[in-house]
Length: 448
Image 1 (tube, rainbow, N blue to C red):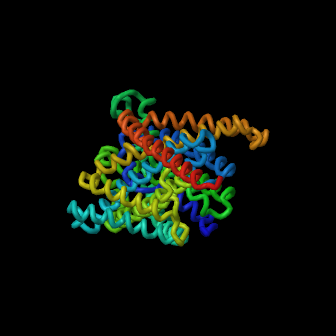
Image 2: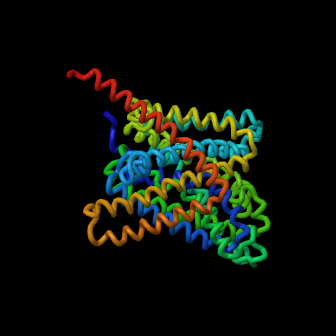
Image 3: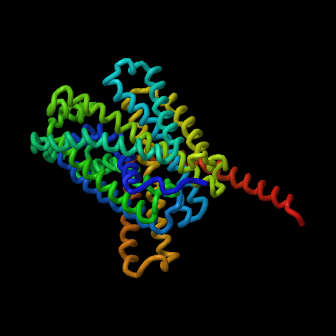
């Protein structure tokens, strides 16, 4: 029997925070530098949207804390096919992102081990990181929780150190609002704010993480909602505190050219040892995000396979109650992607995350916010009279924000993401055919 109750509030929170705070936060100050003080408006929009989405997942988890998270909520709201499309997109987001995170991890390791700049060593070390996290997860939720809690605490230390100390040397002039003519890409202030909101949105992908391994959570109807909202608020606070501090430490023209803005800020504050401290923090952040997303890339197909929408082997668990086949299959897919993507430049690999990771991550958000509205429409008795109006507002705002965020990812991301979505349909059709063949075989063997 599968062991239960192995993830409490703090482990779930560590999963949420760990999956959100990954490699991206260490590069984001450079991306936002050209927008100056306008980036604060972007943070306000994306943080508000993230909290609304967190509240959506919190309420859905209280209704039915099923394994699979976004897949289960979409299935309950719109049926098996919509649930399958959500799961397929979310699964792809997990292992596509893991391929890029693993390569980015090795990029930060190059600070300490310059030999890793060799493409063969870089790819080999990336693959080793993937399988290290896979082996940790194969040992069960207990081993995962221990590692994830430690890595989450360690990754917050350098971010908070720079975030707190940076405000003592903060230069408000560096965070001024630039003139319209100085903004990149043109389009005025409204366009610039929308761009910064889209850039900062990537930092919140993963806020739903605690909903996915619901079968392994202690008191999921209480723990998952609390961990989801609290983890999102913690991540938002860390982001705004630390990234804004870096923007106020380095001149915009310097920050825009920096490939390691947090490390450069730490060197200014603390000397060379601060530079290496933050570089180490980036490695830990990548490893923590990789460990958390490896957990999800096994849990997502498990829940879908249980419902007969993916091969049944993906639902099988080992003696630790872990979907071993799903983890191994996902690990092979991620390894294959690293062999392809890992040959490129680090920035090019990071762009893979932004391109497909954000788009494929936002699609399940749109499904789930709509699923909450669907539940309110068809099962009003499941909600008290007083909360219906509040949940309608949360659902509508969450759906509108998801669509706007999807638009903000850009035409190229939507193009490739749509192809990813459509590519999963033949597998669904094949699985339905297999289900029918198996059902007919059982019927023939049944006694008359």
